[in-house]
Amino acid sequence: KAGVTQTPRYLIKTRGQQVTLSCSPISGHRSVSWYQQTPGQGLQFLFEYFSETQRNKGNFPGRFSGRQFSNSRSEMNVSTLELGDSALYLCASSLAGRASGNTIYFGEGSWLTVV
Amino acid sequence: AQSVTQPDIHITVSEGASLELRCNYSYGATPYLFWYVQSPGQGLQLLLKYFSGDTLVQGIKGFEAEFKRSQSSFNLRKPSVHWSDAAEYFCAVGVFGNEKLTFGTGTRLTIIP
Image (cartoon, rainbow over all chains, first blue to last red; front, side):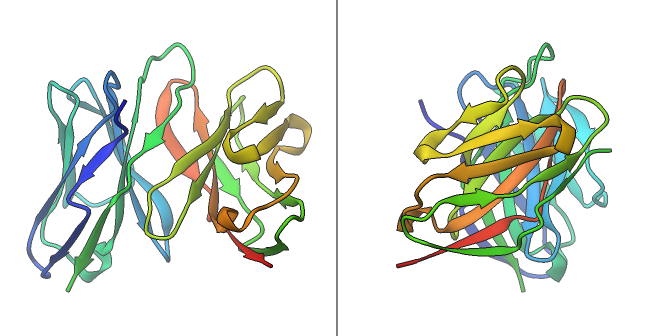
């Protein structure tokens, strides 16, 4: 079955603009998480959505937001872009049952460059 | 809060030699542990995971890892590396019932002929 799909793969934006990234999880997976990866900060957790509700949140400013739709697809939005937002944004999905640990699968990522 | 340490930023290994990448975690309860690999410009591919049970876990591409609770470690091993193993390797720790992963800073693996 198809893996985690992220679009777009590459994009360039100007400071002050906003951007929306999309993620389609593996079929049947109900949890979607987002991570930011930069050379300086490494992989950092942004937030997690489950059943259209944000369940976990990392330590990022309010300019970073997300949502999840009824089909589990998710979008994340960054408003008022800053140069420091240039990063690889990774989406991950899992079954997210609470009874035990879940295997978490990642997509190929969306490369965002802010100029 | 949990944390992960990968003490080796960069490791160079000859093709055909054995490999061990170190990972130490800090967490008060039993964690669940992952190793992911990332090739340049790509996302993260899951190599293996530990949730419970047998402390030696087998993964894809001939990798294995051993969970040692007494040492808070989850080191990744491969008996004989191939040039295609050159990549960055990330250890991650999670908590039961929570989808958030905490990652180490990664170890970049270079393979020389």
